[in-house]
Image (cartoon, rainbow, N blue to C red):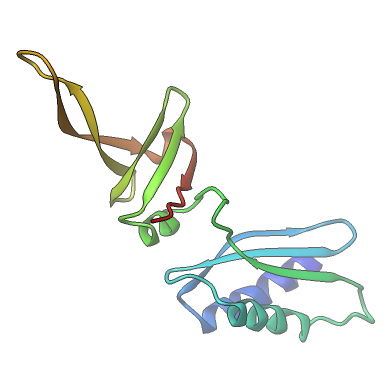
Length: 154
């Protein structure tokens, strides 16, 4: 009963702010409710407060005691949804598959795969020395074990 009611209230709260979306909802046996949200343009503290209030103010602690946490998806969290990849277009990602790890700029996102681009130094085809070449990898979502945004400081 608790989960259904929380999901219902959460859907209503997110319906008020269509730029926000659910990443994860867990409810422990002790009724500790943990919600992780993300947004197309990020998540503010106020967004977390609004979602928290929409749920907390509509559940009765007299009926069933609970604890509630609403978090934004952290920068160290792996990307799990196509919508998260779309909001990170142009940023540098580290994508791990079963076979390899690729680091590059997220150049394209579609329904089936992401495209990463990067520059690499390779030996010249003829003669001595190296030349900079542009590389690209198209990685289907099904092959991605983990993808994270790489934080760079300029």
